Image 1 (cartoon, helix red, strand yellow):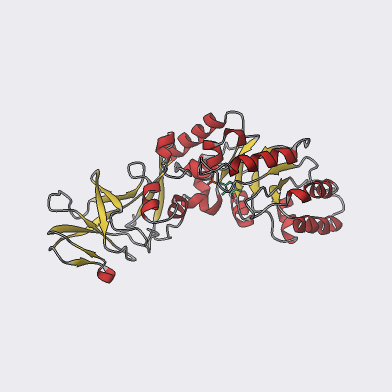
Image 2: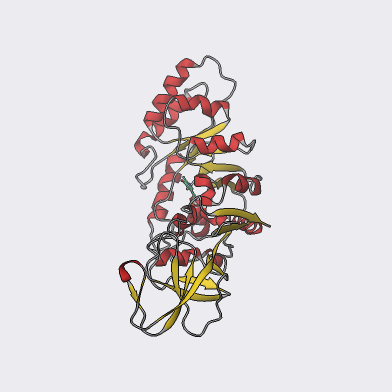
Length: 363
Ligand SMILES: *Cc1c(COP(=O)(O)O)cnc(C)c1O
C-alpha cells in the first residue's frame, strides 16, 4: 500500500458505460482508452469495457498493447499511422486506422506497390477537418481522397467517415452546429458509417450521435462541459484519489506557510500536513482554498503545493487525527472542481498521476 492511492470503481465505470448507451440509444460505442485509459489503467479498463463495439486509442503502441493482452475487440487508431512501415503492423494486428491527410494516402499507395495480394483488408476511417484545424483533410480534398482510397486493393472499400469538434463543451457556441452541417453535407451520398461525437457531443449535441460515438472522459465519470460535473448528468466519478494526514501542528496568527511564505494565518489555527504533492501528480497550481475532504468535511489547502506534501487549514475546532484518510477527489469531491481551482481541465488531472501512485480496482 503506497501513501497515495487511486481507487477505481468498476461499478462506476459500468454505470457510466450504460448511461452513455441510454443517451445515444442506437449508436455504437468506441470506448476511448488512450493515455493509459486517462490514467485509470488501460488493461483493466479494457476488461471492464470489453463489450464495447470498439476501442479508440491515439498511438500504435497503445493498440499493440491491447492486442498483446489478447483483446479481440475492434481497435481504431484515431491519430492514424505516422509512417509507411506502420501500415503492415496495422494489417497484421487487425487495427483500423484514421486517415487524415493526402500524405497518408500517398504512403498507402507506396505500400500498395509492395503487396501483391493481401487477404487482410485495412479498415479506414477518413477524417475530415470541419474547422478544428488540427487533423483531417480539407473538404476540398474530400472527393479526391475517397477516390484514391477506394482504388487501393488492400483497403476495405467500405470507408467510414469522421470529424472532431472544437467547441462542443460550450452549449452557447454555435460552431458545433456549423461543423455538423458541413460534415453531413460532405458525406451525403456516401455509404460509409459516420462518427462525430466525443463526450461533449454525446451529452449536448444529439444530432452528432450518428452511427458511432467516441466517449472518453464520460466513461471515467467526469464532465467535459464548462462549469458542470459528471454527477449533474448522472455519471459517477470512477476514481477516488486519497492520501493521509501525517502531522498536525498549531499555527499562530501572522505566521506563514510553505515555500515562498505564500499564505499567512489571519488567526490562530491548526494545520494538517498531508502526504501528497506534485510528485504524485497533484496539481502544483492548486490555489489556496482548494478543498480536500477529511472525515466527510471539506478543508482548504493553504500555502503552496510542494513535491511530497500539502498543508490544509483545519481551524481550531476539528477532530482530525494523524493517520486520518484524506480524499483529494472522487465522487464526493468532484475533480472538475479541483481542476477549476488549478486553472486546468479534469482531463489533465486524472491522467497526470505519477508512478508513485498505486492504482487499484474495487467492485
Ligand atoms: C480523445 C478523443 C476522443 C474522446 O474525447 P472525450 O472528450 O474524452 O470524450 C474522441 N475522439 C477523438 C478523435 C479523440 O482524440
